[in-house]
Image 1 (tube, rainbow, N blue to C red):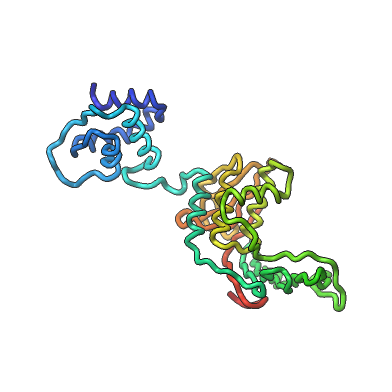
Image 2 (cartoon, rainbow, N blue to C red):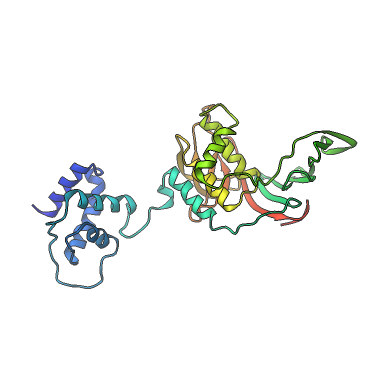
Length: 315
């Protein structure tokens, strides 16, 4: 029985992709068989496919004696899954599924320098929403007065973000602080030191603190979005959030997505309760870092995140 017929038989028995999808890989496999010696074991087949030797030794025909049919088929199938376009390559990020995109983002998050902010510092976030530039300085522990500056074609607006101290915060009406008036409050820290640092605990946290009904994937997705855009997450926490998000049901990858600044990337979305298209989390196609939010409902772009010592301090 020749090699092509053997591969076809093995593919039928192990549920490989359709013949037209396998044809390019078969041709490359046949070339590899004809140009290099192969030991009769499944790992040897995988090695030849990943990196054909440069030596020009006399060709030997592949004889699968001593190799289990299922093992050979599994080796071939694994190569086809990992390198669909070229031998020895990697799956192009734009073709990765939603779960893989989030796992790539988790791995990338762990490469970012870890900064442990002090309670008296501020989380600075510069973002873009449409044509409006937004800069925010929010208290790390939520007790100090922060600041938001919004700049657009219409002008510049400054908003005070009252800190909550001893259960009271200064009263704000419009854009102005009301002198001598306070109101009840609960601190809203820009950095949550209590967030989990592993995926299982993070998923349990999201479920226990969900903003919607139990099992509501749309609400869980928006909760993930909130933590990504409105707070500072240390690397292990951010990675855990991505890994937990990867377990949400009905995630879908958007190969060509853009954030609010027009930066292209790979998007992740989920079913929207309104049916009008929900937000799209956009990740850089090569570095896998979070860029911002896109989608038909509008979005934002995260341009910078830093820890600074005072509100209004440039990053």
